[in-house]
Image (cartoon, rainbow, N blue to C red; front, side, top):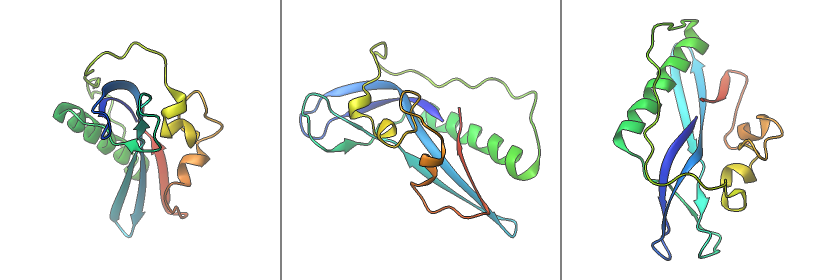
Length: 140
């Protein structure tokens, strides 16, 4: 899932927005019980030039949209249900997001998840233990 989020540097206090934050969901179904693990890719501050990856801040509305998209994907993958009449859900932008992608400070690029560095999506699966009953997906 690619989402619009804001970041705040814990060292210098700088704020920045990004329209290319990836969230990977690892979904597993075992005997009609499901489990979802989520990994949010972080970013580093380009001003401080430290090795600290910062977690993004979420708007409440974007959390709700992300959960709705996740539920729809679970219904498709594990239950074979496709929802055709679901309205298009667009994430709400927060802050200025018109600059180039800062791939040098992007954890998603480091792991090959972002478009610029993506070799294949198998690299995203390495972030959590995955077995044959698991499905890793990047919800777009």
